[in-house]
Length: 202
Ligand code: MG
Image: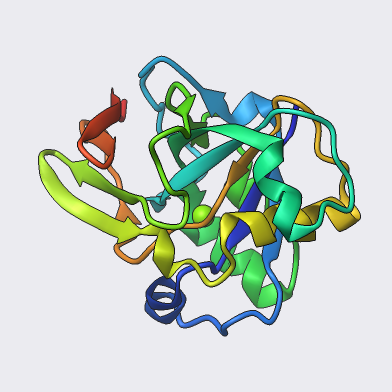
């Protein structure tokens, strides 16, 4: 399986990092070795001093597809989840300055904690509230209606270039409120009122 991530998909997050609004979705990938499941702790890596949390809605692909039209994209997923796109902001800043790829800043071991997936039945993916608490305090909160590129457009766009396969996961972008984590932090993520993950930074 592969993990496809969308960057710069919420206007206020683009502003907080001083980036430009993209004309088409910004795509990058993480390796499967980035995944952390079952609320296992995130171990703070020793090659960075500035790991940021980015809470994101996840989509799990359920069947193979390429060049999917937006109107058919909903047929290619039936489960959603919540995850963190951990980012070594210091390493990313160097890459951005040099115009180099982000993989080491975004794809390191443990950089993709994910929740269990739940059925999308009963949810409108264009109108889902989600949020992140750090040590009990709300740090990120958004609604998927604020996405610049909605889920079905993301699937359509990505599948023009990269064939999607069953089990692939899409990180759909983070809203404003990203910030650093330190060892000892507790991160809890919610879709609506449903707790999706709860883990420690160690
Ligand atoms: Mg992100």
